[in-house]
Length: 150
Figure 1 (cartoon, rainbow, N blue to C red):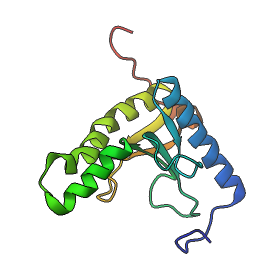
Figure 2 (cartoon, rainbow, N blue to C red; figure 1 turned 45 degrees about the vertical axis):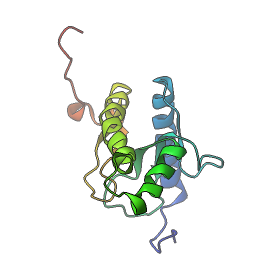
Figure 3 (cartoon, rainbow, N blue to C red; figure 1 turned 90 degrees about the vertical axis):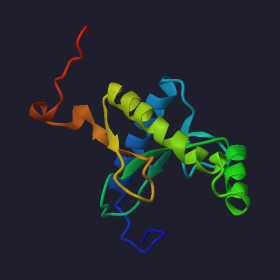
Figure 4 (tube, rainbow, N blue to C red; figure 1 turned 60 degrees about the vertical axis):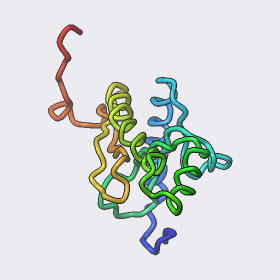
């Protein structure tokens, strides 16, 4: 069972998801971004691209996702302002930055051959869903678009 009472995915499935998460991290790091897995020790206060891996056997969406984490000081300032001044711009800052980073993360991952798209979830609207590598798709389903001038 997973932490939330769902059936845990098999070790083989988790290994495949872990490899996909590692490919995502490598692609983001090659682009110059700090990137790490959520469960890695010592990353609680680290800012950058956070890669989440779902351990559940059944997922309603992608089993790997990416979110952006602002500097811990900025997040703390937002939390502290919630009680004293909930309309302050600092309260919205972490979410706003996450939404701005979302399109950049998607473009970086797509350019690395990783299938990524917007999250369609009101709980984590700034997250990016990762579904796999384009090379994993059958040839007939692989994107063939070549941008003009390339």
